Image (spheres, rainbow, N blue to C red):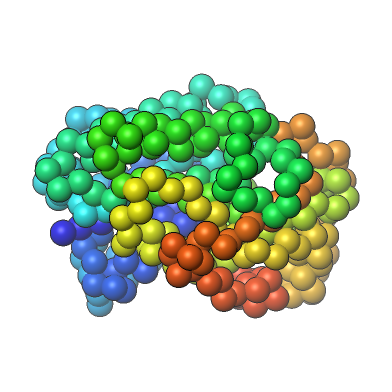
Length: 321
């Protein structure tokens, strides 16, 4: 049987596909290669996945949209996946404020389409949703724990993801689907998106482009390396847990200013930072309680910020070369 990975050409999706292939899985990847950032970057990611498939597993890529119900019906009937890892989404907290309709169309309608295809299967797949720490909003509880109501999201992106979590509960309740929502905390690493802070800092250091530097860098983030996130995602796909919401983070918040300084030291160049006030859609702190992930998924993050920034920098330098 196969594993269905949506957003397979993206940052987390391509890494997840590679990990599954290394385990000998048959992976069906779908991505619409939209222009949120350069489609060529996504095609480059796919080439790396395809290269891995030459030595392990089997990879089939379909260029398509999760809002296309007819396409999903054909794919599910042809492949009958044992698990659906749903990573496709419109990302970005601040940009979602400008076009909330698109974020809801993709992040909620797309999720509904996938859930309904799983419901229609004879042997129902395990469903893993990529959610986000942004659903916690401006919670005062530290660390962030899954029992928090998470009912005050600050941006359309976060509210669309919270709505998708709740939709998963509906399908679990009515149809018995095994649904796990993984709340990711500030993921970074090789193949990272160019709109993410880590990438923008190095781009600025080498190219001089201006980077908004919110609140003077006085914001804590639970920076989590891509390899650790993928380990949690794959573990969730292998477990039938009923309905669960689980944090995936490092569990060690780091000041944005310190994270930027680490990248600056590796580059040996200063980025062009433009100080700006913090957005109303942003928060000063993210901090994951990962006790539940340890218990249910055997999750144990291994890559700290010092090692993670070094690996990211080496990848970025290689890309520039």
